[in-house]
Amino acid sequence: MSEGIRRLFFPAITLVLVVQTLQFTPWALGAPPVPPVAIFTYTPIAPLVNETVTFDGSNSTGDIVRYQWIFDEIGFADEENPIAVFDFPEPRIYNVTLKVIDSGGSWNTTSQNVTAYAPPFAIFNYSVRELLIDEIVTFNASNSYDLDGSIESYSWDFADGTNGTGVSVDHIYLVEGNYTVVLNATDNDGFANSTFKSMTITTRHPLASFAYSPAFPIVDQAITLNASFSEPRGGTIDSYVWNFGDGTIVAENISTTTHVYNATGTFTVTLNVTDSEGLWDTESKNLTLTGLPVASFTCSPVSAIVNERVTFNASLSVPNGGTLLSYFWEFGDGTNTTENNPIAYHTYTTAGTFMITLNVTDSEGHWDLDSKSIEAHIHDVAVIEVMPSATEVYIGQVVNITVVVRNEGTDTETFEVTLQLNETLIETQTVTDLAPNEEKTLKFSWIATGVPPDASYVFKAEAATVIGETAKTNNAHINGVVKVRSQPTLLPFGLNTILPYLLIICLGSGLFAASGLIWKSKMAKRETVQSGEQPPTLESSNREEEVKEYRDYILLLLEYQKVQDKYKRRQISREEYLRLKTEYEEKLAQKGAK
Image 1 (cartoon, rainbow, N blue to C red):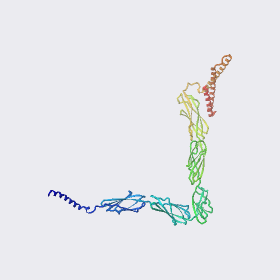
Image 2: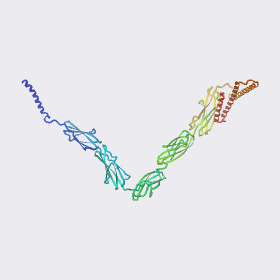
Image 3: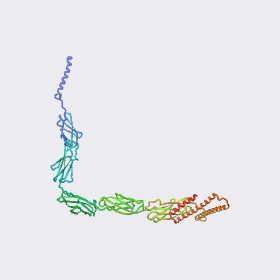
Image 4: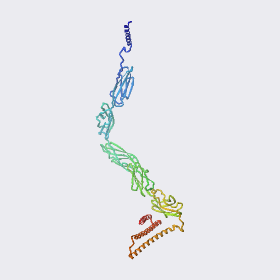
């Protein structure tokens, strides 16, 4: 085979093989495969909220084996048949998608927007004085509404052969009977909804009405009932029949009557009025009969103490039907308070007997009083004086101490009084039945032993606190400093015996010397005048004045000593002693300065 033939042979063989291969491929025998096409419809075209919508994908083309529905991401369906149903929960536009899949796995989708509508809500009410013939009845549908738009029209069927339009209409019924009124509301989307109400129209009978007084009646009180508010409405009212609910029935030809209940409780009073045409009407009211409240209270403590709080408790008060609302307290000392609970508190600042009055008022306006007296006391004992007989003693000597106590309260008191020396107990005495504003003098004694000498000590008297005492600052009194010295060399007689006499002798000598100096000065002055010499100098005159001042000081000191002796013997009162004490101390201070 030549080289040229060989070059043509191999391409020819290749072409034959390709042709033969193409003859045996499936699609070579016909047209290529066609993909599916998704198509769907739905009914109804304008669905309502919560209405079942049927979706039909049977118009889709191809060898479809699956129909998959997507309802705006709130619902999904995967079916072998082309029908699916769905209801939309609220009024709005929903996107619905259908996906079809064929036997070869090919697929196709299509989508449509579906609008769900809401029907209007028809609502109405009516107003009328009474459902009677010839009365105007007003029907009002203004409470109707539409969720996805607005209501365009209102139509009424009054069930008596007449109709009306508008959101509000008036109607008059001419014949008595039962009527069913129908309202039909249509919105802007053309959807309608209806509702109805039934009513009974009657003829014009009398209207019963009555009032009673008082508004909050009590047992055994006459109650006035007045039916003059009743209306005849055509004829005239001929009779008034009262049923008082306690077994008593009274017929009257006048509109007023009275009745007395003898027990508490709630009673139903029924009035029946009948007119001249034989028509009648009734009205009933409940009357609640109560008793008067009863005020009652207690005091704690029963006997008050000045400046201490007293508790007043009115919880024993009884309302007798109503409810206790207020408690008004008058405490008898010019003060008062109003409380809404039964407990009140008060503090008396002065002693005495006080009248407390409680006024309780209940929910019906009824009230009652209760009164009690209370005594406010002052318990106060005081130590008003501590006086030692000496301010300086020697070891072994006796000091007498006078202690004066006073009852400054309002009650007779019994209490103990203790005497201490530098916080060391000396003695305790009991004061029995000390009357108010009375004083008692106690005598104590102390022997200057058992203490270091050459030191000063202080006496303190203290009255024990009595029950109810609040002012305790005056229970103790500290006064009288005594100095204890070492025992001196014994004299033939006691120093205490001669000490008063030595004081008198010294004072007398001082007065005698002062008098002698004054006399001597006067004589010298007289001799000088007689001899013609110069009068005494200013220095000698000043000396005479000093001597005179010294004498006056000594005399004033003796007078002050007498005042102290009188007070120790209880010959003058404490107030008088304190006044004279201040007076003499001021005079002595002035004399001492000179």
